[in-house]
Amino acid sequence: MSRSSRIAAVTAVIAAAGCQVDWGGGRIALENPAPPPDTTAAAETLEPTQLPLPPGPHLFAVSLRAGGDARLVPVASIRRGDDGLELQPIVFPDEEDPTFRTRFDSAFLASGRELHLLARGGRLGSLVLSGDATPGATGCPSVGAGRALLVPGQDLPRIAFAVRGDVAGTDDPERVPPIAETNSMNVAGPVLAERMIGEERGFLARRKSLTPVELAGDTLAAMAATWLVADSLAPVPSGPDAVSLFFLARFEPNVGFIPLWEEIRRYDDPADKEAFEFVDWIRLDGRRLDFLRRYDAATVTLAASITAADEDRGISWVEGPRCRTLERLGLG
Image (cartoon, rainbow, N blue to C red; front, side):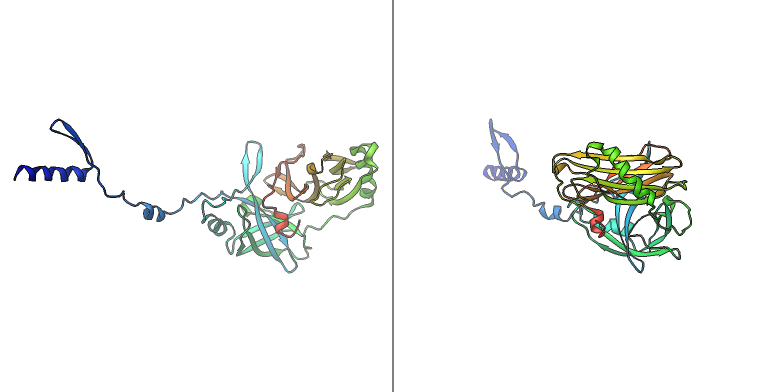
């Protein structure tokens, strides 16, 4: 091979490798003119990352209709922490995992799945899911559907709650009748409201709701009530110098009604409105869960108090403002 041929061959090898070499005291750098390999197609074929589903069990809010038709929404995951039972939010991704909703609905809203139906502190029956699911807003669980199987003679509450049977316990379904409002509740309510709000403005308070309730293991009367000054139970701004009062009170013989739990708010700025109204209560894992509607200037959300016997009551959990479970179930 001639000298010129050998140089041409070496140059071709160097060009293909795209590197630098020393040549006769000089440095030669040759680059491969071919474009870098296209990795776009390969990236597009990758499967999206599948986020893990929030583990059960979950707590469901249920809207019951005449004939037994029901709609339900998962509102929280149930956890057992150091301080007992806790409710934690169910976090739906916005767009990161398009399979998340389908997988969640298949796991927790599947056809034939049976849940225990709870209201008024007891088990009313069962809820058998149909598998139908209406997608919620971005970041919110779907609305499921099912059929309520109630004990004979059970009147239909507007709202109930549902959980897996192993979480609810082994109680058999029972007829749980509503508790009648008594004249003593009507008489005691204004006295308690005026005392808790303050005599200088308590006489301005107006009762917005009163619900007779049962305390666990107690045969004495109890009531939950909401009283307001310069405000209403609606997701609208309040008037100036507004007051909201929610209380749970128990009747004591020879004494009268004694407050066990109160939530009082005073707000000059209408945007700071916060008021509570009783919804229902259930027993779960040795705890009492009292559910409330929470009203602010724009939304109605679900809140809960989780207590064991003889514990101080207070707001333990509040639903985020985004998904508005009660509104989606037609119970806002």
